[in-house]
Length: 110
Image (cartoon, rainbow, N blue to C red; front, side, top):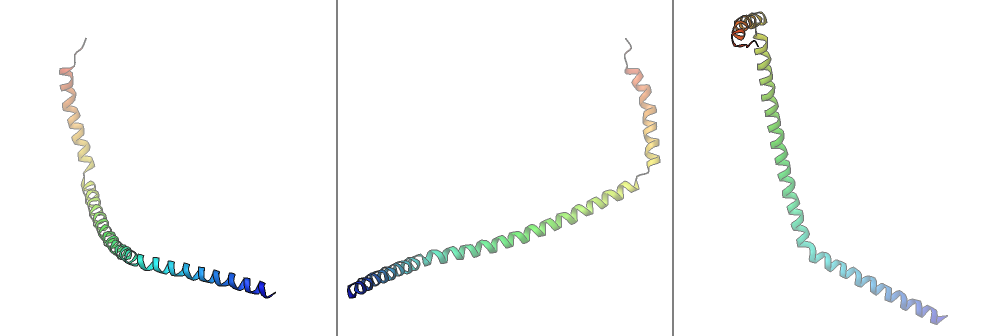
């Protein structure tokens, strides 16, 4: 019975030693990668700031284009409303009366 206890005590001691060795290896690995991780985090912060700035610029540009586009649409609508349709129809009719006789001159009858 004492031999079994001694055996399991040794197994537990060896396992504890292996776990401690693994923990030390992981700690050393993390410490060796710390500068790289810090560099990555700094780069990530810089990229995030640049993306935020770019987003603000794009938003500002889109608002400007939207406002400019709307003002041009309103201006075009104002110009369309200023057109005198009756006068335009008279001009088209006058043009038709002038073009019709001219077209007869150039038409070739077979």
